[in-house]
Length: 247
Image (cartoon, rainbow, N blue to C red; front, side, top):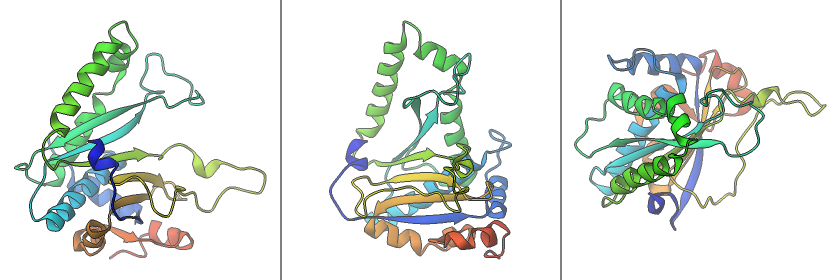
């Protein structure tokens, strides 16, 4: 897993902006018997997982097994829930796996992502914080390492900053027009996606860091361009949120 996440190479970061109307379309396309009402984050995550796997296939010439991980905030999943202002990285990594022969259909990938995230529930956190917590951690690490030890595995990591109230922050000079991720121009991380809300609260901005050649494939993917816009100016977010930039 870490070989896919931390390695030498040329990596680039791009922003993808999803308008609310595009997200609703993805949610509808991702519906299945297993997940009848996907969340915004589940739909966008599964869609980007699908597109990055296809970009990797074009880059390398073959499909690779893939693992998705999502950083899950445990504050609201403990019993009882912890205060939102609890300090520290109180998170757990939810994971989903996709074998080389698995069909890359959106409903199936939504179901995999949703299943992985839903496992991090009150019962799980109860076990994690109990006297068998060490066993829970070891079991997770063993399962993760077994899959990620496969040759040429593609790992893609997500963290969602949606619903954190970042656009409500006011230091005395008004609320922000644009909140963004900050990082070095040459990131040490790769295969990382940060999901953030747009200023209206209903759109999603995805900060994606990929291998330079895989990103070039992604930027030319017509499927991506049906639902999102690359590097849209923050001043145009309202137009995107109103669907003005999408057919």
